[in-house]
Image (cartoon, rainbow, N blue to C red; front, side, top):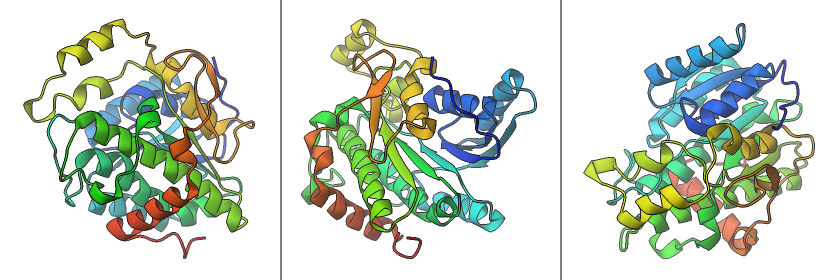
Length: 304
């Protein structure tokens, strides 16, 4: 099992921290001494997670903050609260997401739900929190992607899947967008001489409610093939599935733009994983970053 290095004195924000890999990451960060903010859509669920973490680690510093990544006003309010408090942010863990929504659904701001929740919301949060991150001595942003991104591409002509919607294609595109955000943030930090380390991870096939919550939205049901795959594909629990993300977030051996996942793709201990060619295209990454800034109304220029 990966041992999280000492995190005493550090402030960490973990999105989607009430369940699955997010809760496991928050638990182990808190156990290593970090002051952890559980950024969750439903505060009552966040409080339950907080109690579980405190039961495992009495005396840990754990707070709950409301954050709905599918609502830019919620992202702004959450970020503004942290900025007003003024404490430097050592670690942002972009973990929350939604998967394989059966019918095209839109966020509060009119974005396709998977792109909005998985990429545009985390993008807006990351950029809004850059001033606090850059005020820390050795800040990190760790972003969760997915192995499904390996077969995706960014469709700039139909970014919101308005003309043609496929649950799996929209999900894969959103997670490729996360990879591109991660790599471009690493490039921006290097270009401006900033010490921020941006790295990414994927959890392999980890058993969490992500597998069921998205496909059942709006009365949907997982397809027969999908249901069968869930039963026969090798899988692992959240404790193991969170380790690539924790490695990206805390390992002294993690590198800017590094990408980490299970050794055997679906399961296993953490190892460095090659980025797919689509995630190494710097022109696409820069274009996507510019489009995201326009869509969500934020800019990294002033912070950097």
